[in-house]
Image (cartoon, rainbow, N blue to C red; front, side, top):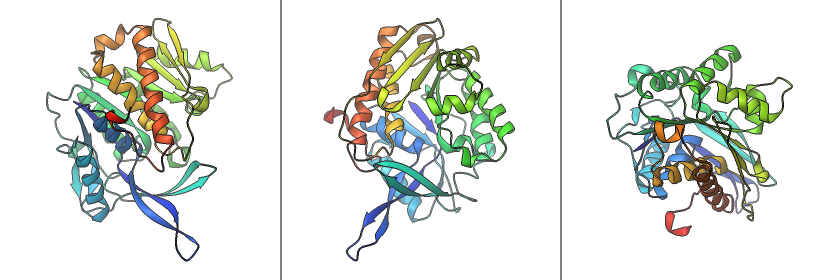
Length: 308
């Protein structure tokens, strides 16, 4: 089982109303939630570990996970509110205003984290859950405790507005990168992590030196490039699609990569350490294919396996 560890929240999507001004409709979302949903729909055994509210939005999120065949046995429930993200769309591209204070997800503590069952063979971390304390520290501690014998993928998906203590965030992120097998970053993420005047190639090499076996660099419409610790490199173009919006595109790309690596029997530490360029290329291409379907739809609505 791939266990997705991180935020589940409600995206409030602007929607026209009969009277004229846009209203907001609640859609289940969150970067890690989206990845878990996409994995479940692709037929991968998947679970989610997150802090979830018992309010009406929390129930909506749980129902959404179950509907996409995501195991919810590791979800930690509380009476704190659900995180809300109000979305603004400009030319199909999304920006967000978050309401996250004292939320069920953000206030998750290490003492709340379950001991993971043996059927969990891979861990996925990402999103704003890596930036918002105290939950971010709890996820980092979970990785240290449970990631030694499991494959680990990390997508920082950096949102600077969430980072209150940059030094603490950088220290925690460096520790998590060192414990990860796959690190996926956008070019913007990479330039924030390493603001020095180096080329993207040199910055990727710096990340690889920290410990990962694979670094995946995405550049929007220019596609994705995979880099191996042994020096191998492969590039896959983005698939052309009629874009409705980009909500969840990167999250579902990640799911496609993980799903293909799992299908090919490579989603374990030894397999990733010895990954071939052919397998990496196949995984990146599958991620691009899944993401192309998602961007053609409104909101984060990943495809089912049969739609591919």
